[in-house]
Image (tube, rainbow, N blue to C red; front, side):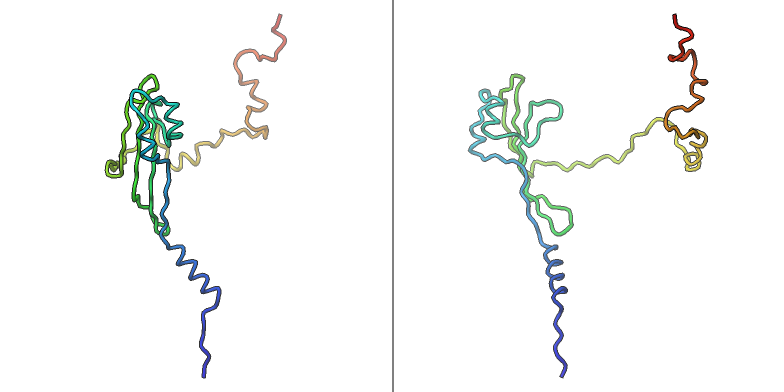
Length: 172
């Protein structure tokens, strides 16, 4: 009567690791202030320093000026190596006037977001396009054979226009 065959211990561990790698992970990122703290921000009264004391540092600041502060939080879910899905996203936008006093506070959620499709155009670069052969042969003869590396070599003084700055014969 044959003895039953059991999978080896390394195979079982490998199978468990492969199964664990396919698990779903949920991550919370960002700085989302509590709503009771946001309620302490009063337009026309609260300054930037007070906002930092109440809400902490913002997640991001406006690109073109420091008048808009963003407190961003996102919760994502990812299965194995696939692209993560955004489950929830919230943003508080604190808008300041020129004097650094709060002008207003907005709350945005994932529903307020808009999908932006990048334009597939390419910005042309000035100059002419070189063929593969022109790129391959284009630098032949442009390198100095003298091993000094980088600076013109012995013939550099002969090619330089005008008197050398090291030539003392023409000085007073």
